[in-house]
Length: 345
Image (cartoon, rainbow, N blue to C red; front, side):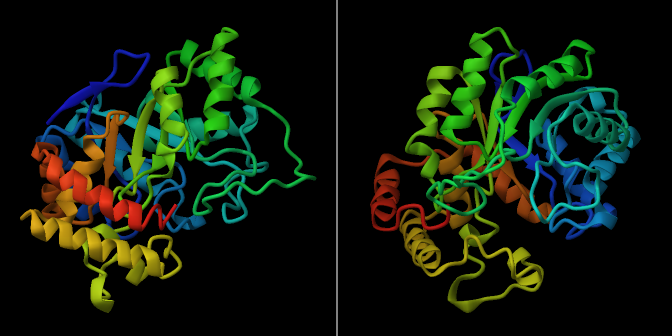
């Protein structure tokens, strides 16, 4: 395994992070345990979860992924060896019933964070993240930002940071991050840091061969403002494993089980995946490992968040850390990217 540090911290994390949003739904607790065991034994010390997980969200499963991790860490007595990242949800219509209001106010942060500590059976979180912005923004699918003239939004960046900093001062949070953020959002957080407020460490955004939109503007912000990048969906909900090609509908595939999760299943994404698959075959590598290795090696990448519903999947995903793509292979990838740029933002 390779390791790096979360920017502006002394927290060492594995370059491969275990994503856990399937735990509690696609994976029950019994099948989640060997996945966490294998990840830990392979040198993965970074686990990412959220109060929202598992997904798709349902109130009766709310927080179950955190609870599974918490019970596992307690049974293994390994909390000190695991870097735990979790998140508070922002306001969106599909998240209902967990509290009122759903925002990043002190009341909401207190409720969400205390619940996460209880679920995880811990007294601190290594990285606490805002799951998505509390404003209209082009995340979860749209490539372009569409402005809403009468949007009821107030700039609460400083206020939110103050609330989070209180947890840091109390020793309950070691670092803070955001997720699904835009260049505007990251620069506002950077501006607040210059004013003397706490600095964010990371943003967790979607990034894969099918979605490289953050290279256009956000990655410059990462480099110049020293903010880390955590990539989620590096396989595009399994699309970049190739298992959905030629009309296949694998029995336990996420999109087979939950057809609404079709973000990576449009016509252009399938064409791009077919082209990338040809590149992988040409160079004698699996499409999965090519896709993951590409993400691992990006110069702005802090950690690549992989998901797996079986130990077999997990092993293949983790092994990508030991693969270096040749210049010729990268050139072939770029040719496909030019032909099918960001088909699934």
